Image (spheres, rainbow, N blue to C red):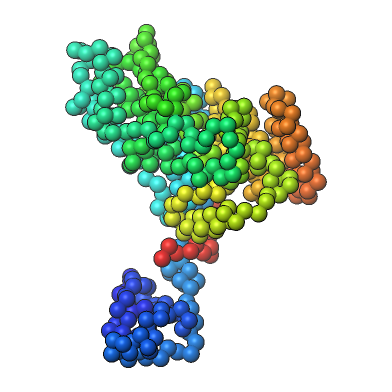
Length: 451
């Protein structure tokens, strides 16, 4: 399919020693792009004769050649991952399998960033967790006939955090200094610490990610019969490992549903914390870390930019250009200046979690989603989400400054011309997300090749 060919058709292999793996058609370079060492003067020093280049050569763009065009599968894979996420959370608080939901989050973001025709192997990561549970059950946990539940729990904890080496990063809940306003939160946060797939690979993750892993291993041990108890996971402290507490008085039969699936005894707060970390890491506007704002610390900065425009920042522009070049080619990078393509899905998933039965998510997540959609040039959706927030009790309980910003944003959206289709949109919910059709494959689209 590929052939080893010299870089230039006019050069022989002994003239140009640099060979590249190229398609069977030749990639020609313009004369001005040839390196200086191929010139007559440089070649004369080594006793070689360099043939003259053609007066003009037409550069072939690989993406224009259909057999070598890299198809963009990101929308299709992201849609499938989102539907998988909905399958899990619509079971409600008691039925959510947090590890599976966290892996679907990683799969959706991987599809957005990689443009790959291959999905993130969610089942492979699930198998990795299953192998961890099987290893501890067969080799490291004492029998329930000879050991107490507390001794069994300590054996599992020692296996994960001592033998396997799963650990926290060097910072706590966030690497952003408290009580400050930072221009680029993505410079401070490493989003990979909140992806369960990356935690399984690097064995490093935030407390919520480690708590989700710990809880899933305990659920698998319960299903296999290695233990007869369930635990509640506490991930509230961001400076120490998650703490597991045995739930006394709950028999094994009451912990497994009629369909054979274990009940969720790890609070969904762990999944919410993971999503809030991702939202903060990809937020492309200033972030306020004061305790009064919490997860909504980016709203004021984003609203001010939408209403008044942002000041010119050469550093931000340089970071944005570099990140865009790499991200468009599916190369992982620390965005630094933020990535609105992943900030929007992270906030959408928080809103969807709040629509699940028994899950409590702060209503301000819908407000933050609205301002992101406005920046993403989706004013119709932004108007719908902002109206839904303005009609909620959370809007009346917000600070006077935030209420004023919400009203100014609503006025800005009302002044804009919205088409008829935008006026029929509904606020984001599990039902509205289910109604979205599967995206079609765009065979004519062109994605830059990484090489």
